[in-house]
Length: 339
Length: 271
Image (cartoon, rainbow over all chains, first blue to last red):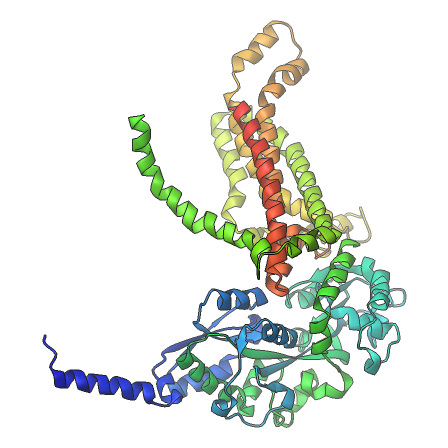
């Protein structure tokens, strides 16, 4: 086949037009985007956002999990650019920003509905609030707060805590530090409290699915657990009193393909819609970033949701944890060796 | 010489594959400990300055020693017993020893929770029969980890040991008997020394394999038994301190290679 000059010019013109078209138009040529999320029920709760997006644009969204921070670093440093959204905790987002692993979101392209201010971060879309709280077997003596959790004499039974240092604020609260004086954390004091209870902590959990299972198996009677994992579980009680409220973000790994990113921004618009967030909250009792959402939540299940109890809880202090990451980690490993 | 050259041609593709797909990436990864972000000894200095990392390494060696000893105590009598069986029965028992290999390590590890947990079969039986009034803590401690690692690694000791025992010449034992040696003396002075190199090689192999265990301490240790693979996971996936992880991995690799040299020496004597 011979290409005439005219055809060549026409093809070239079409190509140039394609390149010049606005990002959103080119995004429609994307057939599929890939995102990495935390997995489990929280991952499933992304479907109510993805379905309307795929229905409207024809772009499929492939979810992969889990989302360890190291995976983000290896994606970016190896130049792999086919992951367009990556889920991170709030501290993880700061870490990723400092290590130059993520790029800013295009909020003008997202055109979101109303969102809580902390969820609308230049580098991340806060999509899901979750709490880490005190849970216990309903047949065990009812604790009121962290002081009771750390009081193994009056509240006998085994405990499980996360195998990360994030439980240290609970130790300080139990020791009488007021919630507004918590930070900067007094590490010496916190570890002293931890030393007191460590023999009663039978499991240091690493996966969110462990605490509810350990409670059900009667392996432990008291647990530090993610709120969504214990909400609505028969035989397990919990309290949002002095729980720590945190926000999971969706970030864009540095170097993601522009067309994919444009599609992802369009997807994030669906994440900002209160109606979709309501459907997601039915999958797992975590809440999206819309200020309109709390009023829409089912009245009988209201108590299960993290953002409903905002005033009782402590907001995770991202800055302190980020600034002190190395120091805390060393102290934590030392503590773990003393078990 | 011509034969050697001919053989080399067949081996080269595999060697190149190993070199490019395995050895080079490993060296690049380990090199991060001295080259990232620029040539430095800071990461090694940090490792030397932080006794915690070396203590976790020490703890890992301790768990590996215990696992090797327990595997030896269970595995040697098992292999010896298998040697005395009829060939048909031997096949059945070898299959039973191999059976766990067909099941995912994750499934096997979780199965121990069902069996040994506070509400597990064993504890409910013990309490039902009145041996104890509160559940025995089998899991979430060093005992739990040892049970898990031994369960996974026992075949690595038993199978080579059993093969080596089969090769021991029956006539040597008969000769000893003819010369009036009692059964006990035949075992300790003839059979055991002949099986010792294979036994020792198996123990070293189990030891080396335990060093890299991740799933078992994570699940059955309840986060209370610090082992090096789990610490590397935190350094690589959570923090992420790849440079420090590379330095620790280098130490681990060096230790493993040294042990492997010991293994080869013993195995060569066994053969």
